Image (cartoon, rainbow, N blue to C red):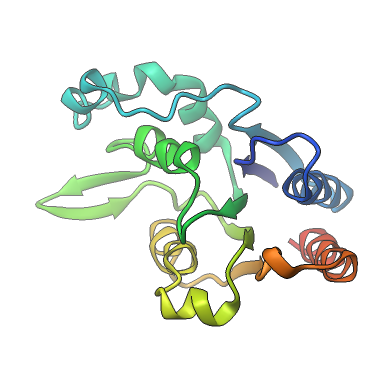
Length: 193
């Protein structure tokens, strides 16, 4: 299976980067063809410009400025997000990726005012997230990233398929042991993806 792995952490020597590398290694070990998309390393521009917005509904012109990313998304049969959660949301670069790449005609069509998915070719979805917050604080805040992955993205891809959701909470108080345990959990889950 061709798996698109989206990564959005700007620090090269970080736990987030270690999770990304483990995800890639484990998916490859499982025999998947991996498309590693490190948004910071690729210098992805997350800004939805005036031009982008004016052509937003005009497929295929709306995808001209992000064509390589659109092509990668269209080839994907699996999608894995590897990202930190900042202020109970995705980093701006990942949010910008969704705004600029998941366009009408690419990820969905509007038919008689209703959204129809164009991502049914993606058969599997997973997220590997790190939170500074505890599980309770994330829950109290509504845990928007979890809802986006398990509800919104899942609905766009295939609402009947399970989602692999892995989260290391309370990174502000983590230890070498909790990080190692979570890294092993990611390894196992991605080898089974």
